[in-house]
Image (cartoon, rainbow, N blue to C red; front, side):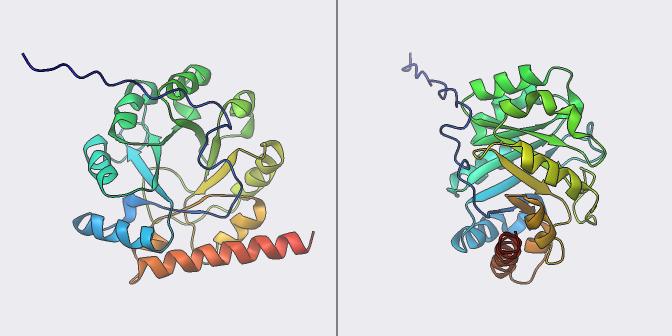
Length: 248
C-alpha cells in the first residue's frame, strides 16, 4: 500500500493583513480571456516580463452569464508557468460550491458576484477559510447598497464597467460615479478594481475616479505588441492619477 500524503489546507487569510494587494498602487491586471490560447504560455510570459504581477481570470459558467470561458484545468496549467497573483473572477451561479476547486488549482484570490447570492457573508467566510483573499463584484446596474453591509468584510470590490459575459464591449461611463463613491468608503488596504472596456481612452477616467487595479483584455492582447500595450496603459493611468492629485 502506497504512502498516504496529507495536504494541509492553506491558513485562513485575515482581512487586510497578508493581502498581496493591500498596498495602494497603480496596477494592471491583464485578462487572460482575451489572450491567444494557442500561444497562452508565450503571451503570459511576455506580459509578466513587462511588469505584470496580476493575471485576471474571467471564469464563466453559461448560467449567470450567457457564455462559457475556461475553468479549473486551464488555471491549474497556468499556475505552473507564472508567478503572477492569480485573480479569479467567478462569473458563476454557485461560487461557494466551486471556490475550493479554483483555490486548489492555484488561484490566489476569488471574487464572486453579489447578484448570485442572498448570503454573501457565508460565501466570504467560506472563501477566506480556503486561505485566499476575497472580493465582491457588482454589475453596472447593481447599486452600492447591495454590498454596503459587507464592504468591511472583503479585500476587493470589483466594479463592472461592461455587462459580464463577453469581452470587447464598450465602456459604460455611468459606473464612474459608483467608483468615486466606493473610493470614499473603502479602507486603505482594500482595492477597488474596474473591469470592462479599459483602453487608452478610458483608463485615465477610471484612474481619476479612484480605481486600482485595472483589468484590461482586448486592449492588451488584441494589440500587435501586448507587453507594450500594457506598459502604455499603465503609464496613462499613472499620469492621470498624478494630474488628479496635483489638481487637488
